[in-house]
Length: 370
Image (tube, rainbow, N blue to C red; front, side, top):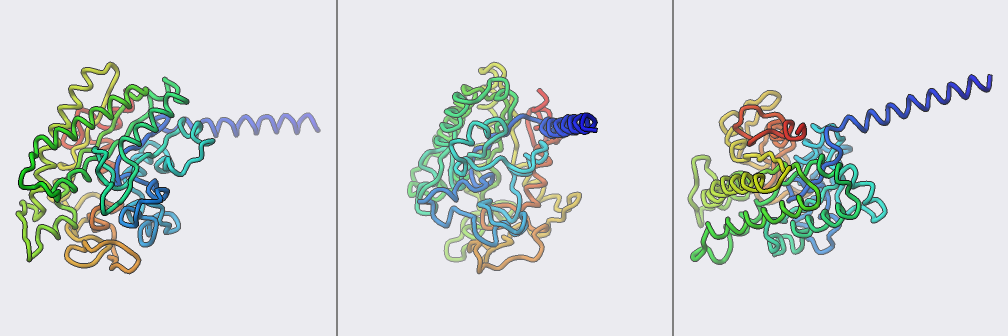
């Protein structure tokens, strides 16, 4: 009887190991490493002592549609773009925030992924370190920490197959639009500096072993409720575009996208084994504006924040703010960020768009199969 029991236990153990291994193998890439700003931050800013409340989202009603209605530091009502893309890659959600991890856990996490993103950060090191955020985890620091860990613990075969996901640049545009040098500013020179920084970060990531890059371009930043409110301020109205958005901010987005596209194309020719998928966020937002009824979604509110008061709901999202009843029909959650419904639509297009309208030169699914 004892021998039969031991045999049964051995079989059960083998079956359990197969289940565990099969579950691990189901992810479409070994690891995901996330870089950027509040669109993909899942809580790094919670751990920055000098980062003020304006650049944190760890209080209600943020996270109202997340698990157990928990505010986690995501600038969203629920999952954000990093989570939703990770889920399409068969992970449960985004990898954990870097600043939440102990030194002892970093080696293990390098095998499955880490989220380095910080709300308020941008391509320039000065971006985010101003009156709104006070202090953020800059892109320079994000990339530096990844490269240090990759060289210490990253296996070359794992790094080359893992996904680097980047969403950054919008905060640089926001801050530049309202800089004190508007009269003498040189837009082209400024945008070239952003692209140069982007190129430098990509080269550093590649140098640490990364080969697959999913890059999200800044969207129509002038269409955020905060920017609409500025453009439509009756005391100081600004030029608006065909969508009723702040034209000056959107013009920067329009100019920046082809510059990023050219940089990525040229860099891919220069760096052996590098592959990328570039997301045209401008096209995605335009598509939603023109096609509000999308399968499973019906975006009927395109200009107002779900959480917030005042014109366009742009007065900020906090525990006392007005909250809409239907988050699924709003494009924007707060004065700067989209709803979980909106990023869900974007994530699906990023992953498997085959029209060539929204991602270039290949979609994310094709990228990870290379």
